[in-house]
Length: 413
Image (cartoon, one colour):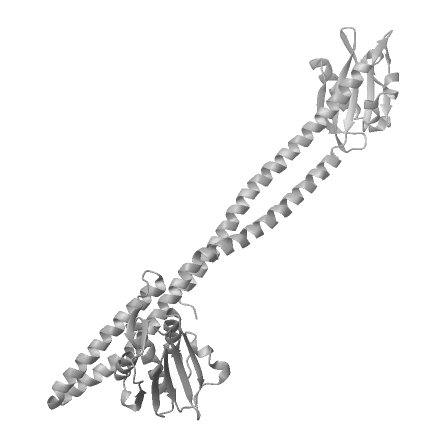
């Protein structure tokens, strides 16, 4: 079960992911809006330019002959062939507009009122005009009208119409692709943001996990000597004649607590990377003998030491802690059987005659939070950590004749 601090960090990660996605979505929305608006204006401008080019070019190709508009060029000009709707209008008797030429049909031209408005604007501006209005089919069209001059008089106009429906459909298709692309980019940004925020918070989560592990291990290491110290003090208080012996035992336990605290702080600094382990030559046989003496119920443990001195390089506090953990684990889970500690070159072996640990679980018990018996433990995990820190190893094997054999192997000096 995760701690409240870890849960807050995970919630913060999701919050950062949502903020990253929302920021990306906002920026993409602005860019997509600008792109869609620009595309719409560009299409409208291109259509107007094309209509103006066609109407102006066709108007310049026409002329008057005795007040009659010559429309024959409209049958041959390439500009006329590409137009959706094309017409040439001239004023007739009484000023009425007359359609002199049209393609594809007269009913495709605007209504009479619209044509009159176009004619009036051309007469007023004396140049080409662009307007929007319904065509003969009722659909909204874009119209361009260019004047045809008869001397100094605008006597006719060339009207060119284009249907903006295709351009609008292309614009709508672009908008849909922009929306799909932006949605995909937002999802990708959310995924990348979640990944990056996770990587950024990983050191904090690891630090929290290590802190919780350290507190658990500290409680594991300090619980037994503190309980023993309390019993010693209570025994000395209840029996004045044993007060002197109890004080001596309390002093010894206090020294052990001081060493434990020093070892715990050293381990915390080493795991945090703020301190490096200092390996010094030491007598492994003496260290084991001292560590066993500090274990409660150590009188149930027999120690087999070699005749020659066993020298290794290591940290005495950490190695002593590892040996104590091995012995305490054997006493706790050995079923009350005798415990034997033997020392050989680069090896400390602790053997008990208990039920042992099934082979498939022998590696699992070295992970933090797992124990060889019931409940949750940290002792063997610390042993493995200390061994690897010294370039060694720790393992569990079946003891000869049954039981469990725990080995701490170290490089020999």
